[in-house]
Length: 277
Ligand code: HEM
Ligand code: HEM
Image 1 (cartoon, protein in one colour):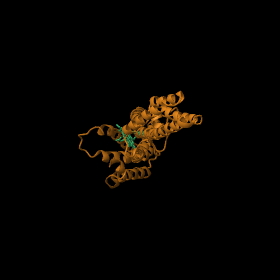
Image 2 (cartoon, helix red, strand yellow; image 1 turned 180 degrees about the horizontal axis):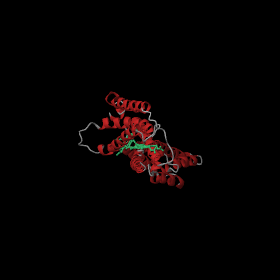
Image 3 (tube, helix red, strand yellow; image 1 turned 90 degrees about the horizontal axis):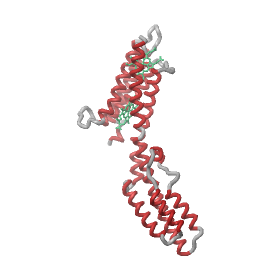
Image 4 (cartoon, helix red, strand yellow; image 1 turned 60 degrees about the horizontal axis):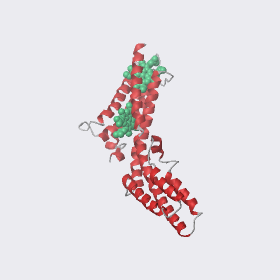
């Protein structure tokens, strides 16, 4: 199971590799003290910078490797585990390369983009480890499609009952059937809520209407209200499913474009450094 073992893959092999890489970088940084002081342009600075840049190119390569289904170099799970741990080790390697010299320049832009990519990666791992189980629990025996079918069925029943009630009830029930939205814009999907939900409006409207009705109509209204409450519950689960899927996917729209930005800033950094040499 990919989602369970990304971090523990092969008995934490890549955690060990990354820890060794970090230890070597820290050792090299402390051990090598040039008379000019530690900085990105010292021999150790160049070494750490080159290792960092190679790591970044390799991490970017993951986007290609992910799509090479026929490749035989390692499993995707192994690649992802290495990606996560070695990607994280960059935080130390690049910081020591720069010898903690951050300012307002293209070098620090590369550094800031790198940190942003890594932080979005942390979120991605959290999402992969946590959300699939919550999704299963939320859907239980249903799928998104079966929830939609059940809701359509409740709408049909509600419209039949509403025929014996005042116009206002018919309008509310019709709007709930036709104007209830699941998903929509990215923000809407992500939040899993709709402040203008037509079903919620119908539930509230029917409750108010119920106070003005008597006898048979009051009973029918109560029945309608119960149906729509049930729909509201299914709707909340459907929206939650969409929200969890969005939270599982949308972060990659931060991670990947920022990685490409990082590559551009890194090229600018290296070129500018050689230009002033
Ligand atoms: C081939 C790889 C690299 C080379 C040759 C390289 C080269 C250098 C050099 C020569 C300096 C010293 C500049 C100076 O103090 O004037 C430096 C500083 C720096 N590098 Fe790199 N670098 C590389 C990779 C990276 C990477 C991967 C990052 C982070 C994403 C990075 C971020 C920085 C930062 C933040 C500084 C400090 C800038 C400052 O002193 O204001 N470098 N680099
Ligand atoms: C500078 C460092 C990094 C770069 C340049 C980078 C770049 C990439 C790229 C290009 C992809 C492929 C996305 C795609 O094509 O769909 C990817 C996926 C991913 N990265 Fe990173 N990454 C970095 C660091 C990290 C870190 C530190 C973590 C976690 C701690 C991480 C977690 C992930 C995850 C979970 C995926 C998704 C894999 C999948 O959907 O199959 N990344 N990264």
